[in-house]
Image (tube, rainbow, N blue to C red; front, side, top):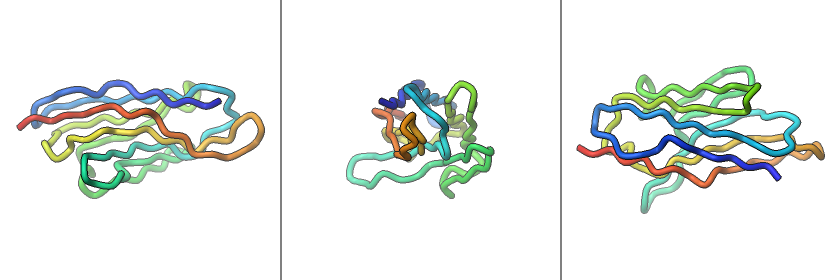
Amino acid sequence: QVQLVESGGGLVQAGGSLRLSCAASGIILSINSMGWYRQDPGNQRELVADITSGGMTNYAHSVQGRFTISRDNAKKMVYLQMSSLKPEDTAVYYCNADVINAYSRRSVYWGQGTQVTVSS
């Protein structure tokens, strides 16, 4: 069983910063892309940023220049450094990973989500 556990969410004032972390555990042969998505009430879950195993990154236009995604392959972790936060960044943030498990099966896993609230 593969699990993703996020941490680092919370309440911050507009203009502030937060760092989200996500740890993957379980019997994992390899992890392809890892990413962060977010969802607020009434809206669909949207991609925030993702990163390949080789370090290539992709960002939503709304966060480009403010957020930075990174990963530590040895630790099976992905991070999201969020700066210059805006109230519209308020959402539940979900970690996502494209995993090859011990049975050589490829599956996409999700974390349980962590709340980020930005006050104006």
